[in-house]
Length: 295
Image 1: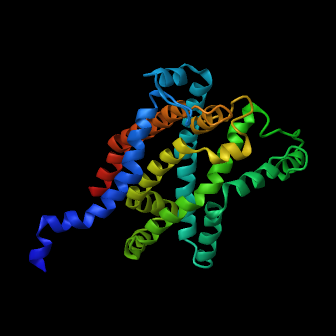
Image 2 (image 1 turned 180 degrees about the vertical axis):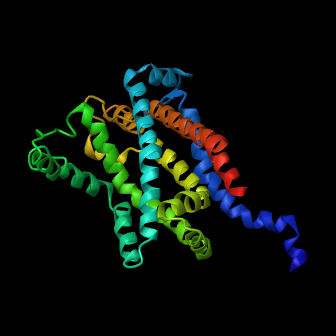
Image 3 (image 1 turned 45 degrees about the vertical axis):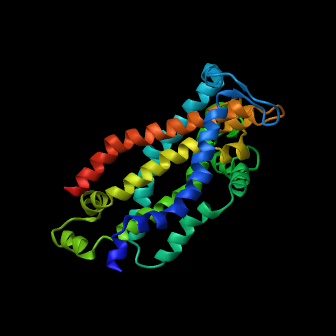
């Protein structure tokens, strides 16, 4: 048996089926998409090679440049607001002695709900006349706010909704890492006089740095491909205030007169942005966090 496992051909044979499926359903579609991104093709007629025209058209459109900025808003909100809140809530739940499973299940439920359901639910919450949010603000004398119809509020409303949908999934990941920390470490810190905040800041957070790094990368990737909540709640409006690159692709390349070449070019741009941003994070802050953990 040991002699068999030392044969490299055995490993090749075991990996070959998975590798073949990977090439068939990932590598080949990506390569073909890369080709059609340089063509003027509507999906039915014969394509025409146009070079970099699709990419030039995209970056030359002010609406697409605005969509890129909106994707950056999603990234900043996810990393700067959502991730700290995830860590805070995970630490709170980890300290609960009773009904901990109930709290874990409760925060995780939004992650398994349909985006359409969440969009309709929050659309009612944001409803300017009968929505509970404006009703609550009205108790303090605040005039009704058109959350999804005013450009200055629409993006914030969508950011909050998107965070509410996915924050529970990340909390469960971080909570699993916290609960895996040996109890002896916390007990030793308690004996040394460390209160709850000091234990969390100087012990818990440093020990869960690897999972925090994963959460940040997943948040960046999710912010780059966000589209469903946008299409359900605002369709990119009002006046492009919530348009992101993926919704721009759907609205401009998949309409009555589809342009799959242009749409494929945008999808490659989204892929390139996500790849560069996650690589930059991994080479800078991600590597620093992993290095700090290994020390």
